[in-house]
Length: 213
View 1 (tube, one colour):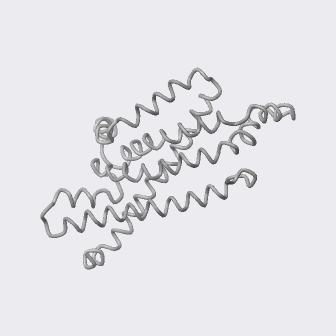
View 2 (tube, rainbow, N blue to C red):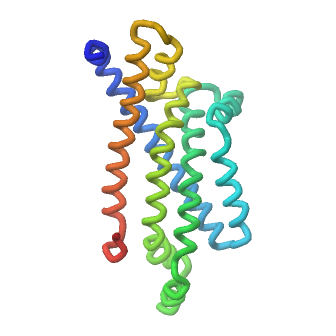
View 3 (spheres, rainbow, N blue to C red):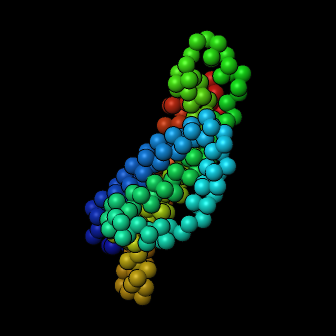
């Protein structure tokens, strides 16, 4: 194992960077999409059941099946990987964003209106800051889930550590099969822990002091 890592450490580091980059970029897209949809859902209450249904049903779709459906339209590589990771990342963020925005006290919003704030100002200065801790929890859940989806993206030759796991599984009994599988798996765990630590720090820095737990 030590020799295996020593011979491939540069490639392992590069693939770890790719894996983290794929998840982070997809998380950013998913956050924009999830919060945007949540704003619509909380503004037009009739959309709430549809959003909940989409969130629930979306999580039941196997990632292999989604990647297979994307192949005829996107080909292989980065594009289907980003679409798949973003799709699954949106779902927890959407659910938490809806819950967070709906939980903002109506009296606070009325007070903001009484001070002359318009709808946009109320969203940015009142609703979003108060809902942010709940949204960040959804983002952290999405980040951990996305690490696994990004690994499965190796099925369409996506970037990251997934190919190491697939190589190990496809060469079971070979000299380095176990090494590939273990390095890929442990590498993803390490990247996931580092990203979660960064998200915890980011949440603390972006959450108003008055509502920190």
